[in-house]
Length: 100
Image (tube, rainbow, N blue to C red; front, top):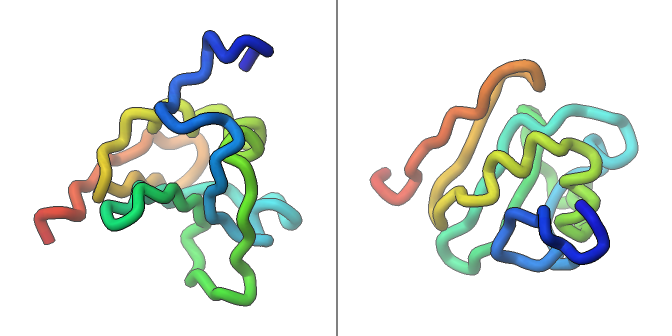
């Protein structure tokens, strides 16, 4: 991302708050599950481990993109959808959660 945001792919600004976990930020665990919540438009970035409120953290979207640039592939993920992958080297699989 450059300073004038010309390469910023998300509709949300780089400083929008997103939810993630301490395991990703402090332990270097990979982001394997991404959700774009339909109720409030929030983004969530998680490992494949169970999410605990005690482990939850709020950071700027730009920090998540800096940690894992492949997240930019999901910039157009619709509201109510999730994206998953088994490992960082695998492609993202998009799933429509609004149909369940």
